[in-house]
Length: 226
Picture 1 (cartoon, rainbow, N blue to C red):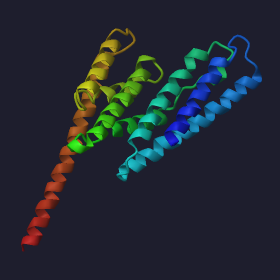
Picture 2 (cartoon, rainbow, N blue to C red; picture 1 turned 90 degrees about the horizontal axis):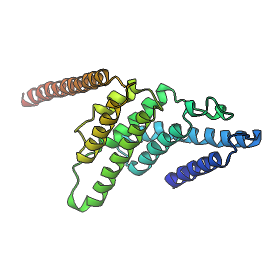
Picture 3 (cartoon, rainbow, N blue to C red; picture 1 turned 180 degrees about the vertical axis):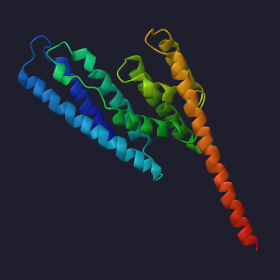
Picture 4 (tube, rainbow, N blue to C red; picture 1 turned 90 degrees about the vertical axis):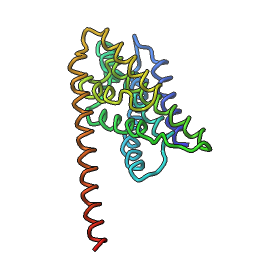
């Protein structure tokens, strides 16, 4: 139900934007669209936080989380600030703050990291999870290709997941890298370096966590053996 509500809100916003007379918009139409835009962003940002916490608690929110990620990306692209800066709709232009981009990616990442280990009888659920992975990765990649958000944060985050989530997701990232290489404004070397740094940091943190658990396990084994 919540997914359909968000989709309906997004479609209403998109339709209102399409219906506005760009050359001579009325104050009423701009204020009405601005109100709908603001309401939808409030809902999306609420769910970016809430759904991340739900998944930490082990609750399944796969479909809704995917919808929130994709609609958030679509809204950021639809109201990209530079598109409206020299028009009469400049007040509708929107540039997301870094904290919201980070929350967006955190929820995307949770969808990417959902376990692949499913039983045969859960094949349909596995298909849904794979589809959602692709959907959130495409949404994140679209933000970079459209220059909607800064590449400095999101670029390395996406590339650091290369070959980590199956063939289709890997292909999406590969196409993103190819497209970025053709963009003269993209510093690919810096992006790769930062992505590698984040991968190594993740491996280091996992190694420390494993080592700590092994130490605790060894201690408990010794205590229980006495």
